Length: 256
Image (tube, rainbow, N blue to C red; front, top):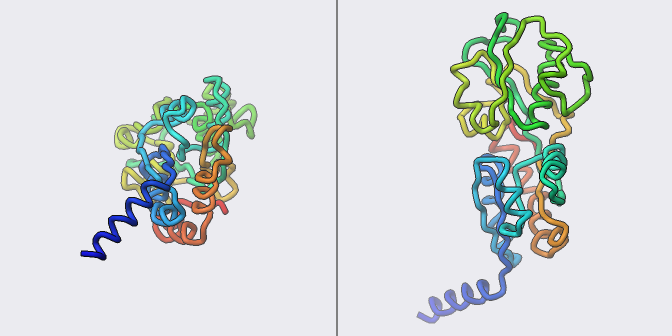
């Protein structure tokens, strides 16, 4: 009985002194990584609460409006574009991992077999859309007016020898139409959710030199809080590197 009372007292003491940190994340791999570091943070007095989202808009909106403390789902080019478009001033805390974007198909096994007039879908947000076009250009499927412009759009295609019909869709919805198109450019987090194996199923995929490292994002007013520093340190731990390496088997790459 005394042990039980002591256990309840310990829980009560933790609850009284723990600082709560609420972080938005997309399900895979972001929320999974955050859930993995929860126990380590609890030992340091941080009660990490993970709120799962399936879109790329609300996590930033809610952090900016101080409804959430931070989010973990995006890369720096996306954050820069979001801040510019929405007038927000969210900031990067630290880089964690890279999710290579890949091209997938349920109809062909090699890009050289892509038929003339093929239907291709890419993400409709500015940075990931440009990222998809850069990958197609690197693979020799199209050429762009500015080969290194990460904000390239369909209008910036210089040559399209196979007359591809390229449509833009919300990134989260693209895996759902994979069987209805010839080629789909899918972010790795959504590919994993759709049970695709990027290392095996992607016809072409970004390499380790990609600049699209996924980052922990917060506001300037809480970026340097003790709880945020502890979360950033936990996300850079050897244990997290091992977790990412073993769980995702190359589909997600540690960036530290």
